[in-house]
Length: 503
Image 1: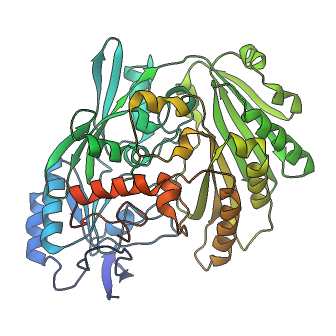
Image 2: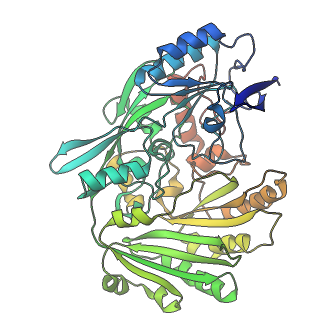
Image 3: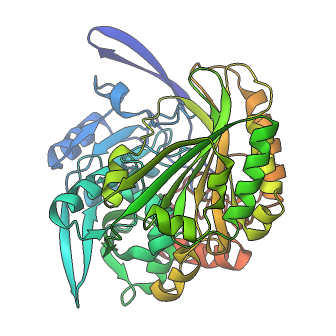
């Protein structure tokens, strides 16, 4: 392993950063920062001068603000960061990377739990400023939105609220989550039961391949790449510049119901009633189950339910869990935009280790899946690490949208799943948290017995059979790998547990 030390000055204060070799397996032995193969100062200056955006290197005072990702458990140091402002910047960057055998990473907002969007000694393409958006008329009253990779879902929802409020995008609730990584990994939404997963609304991708060629992938052009991009994960096939999403009719009135319970015997009983209820709930229901510790130190859980219709209709369709009491809030939203405006945001900055399970009807009806989540969150504290679980309700159109949108690469556990359950530990201070990770891995193994795969975007790091957990079968993974080898034969893109990793 090559190591080096980089000294840079920020406001006159020297800060030492260790550089480690990229911990990625693949066909190439990539060039590492400060090795003789690395671009020299003259080459870097010429490259920087040619960009529409700008370049950041480890000796820049800007570097400390740009290299971290949201999950501080993973610290990686790119050798070059390019703040992309145009397609030309991407093409030039890939040309530099190819000529020096530098691995390429791609980042938009930094929401990534396994560090796939960064890497030691990588040339990192950052899309934080690429935020253009435009409406597309599909005819027949149908419309779409074309967005650049740097957009967050907050950017998109706000744009549509102002310019096209009669439609909504089936996008993330967290306004800070980027559109690109979200949809490439599948993309679930608080309104997935209305319109399916993000991949089901993705109509087209504009992408730069490793060889510098720009292509369009949709149902008619580059169809195999289009299939792979819809669920095959980001960071490995190429650099996505634009995505076109189909828009859906604004459903109007949304009923919001919040109920909360302690993590005790009475709460466990309520959770089991909820588990049975959700296994047969109306397709108009969506929302979240949140389990964890409150700011006052109280352990508990609550569900936030969204019903597309009135409270009276919700009761008629079987809102029997209201009889459990502990109702914290009942509100009417005129449409989904009022919910998006109050949805919580994950700003990152802590160390996090997570795991996920796609839970179907059987897992809910047996009560075993939510029992495992309850027991994990209710366990004894390990150091400063907190434990939480967040269940995103699926169902409805998630099961059927693929028949309309065409084949995608996502795991079958999504299609027959009723909840995507993500649990994990977080801690603020750095240090040895191997005990917390070990407990999480043990809980993941227990929860996995009652689920069907894991969500690529919310992954468990210590996952030996990650190919089948993310994509369901060897056949699907092999098909994805064939696409990878066709579009990036030299593995310019290579990231942890991405298609092609360890190949």
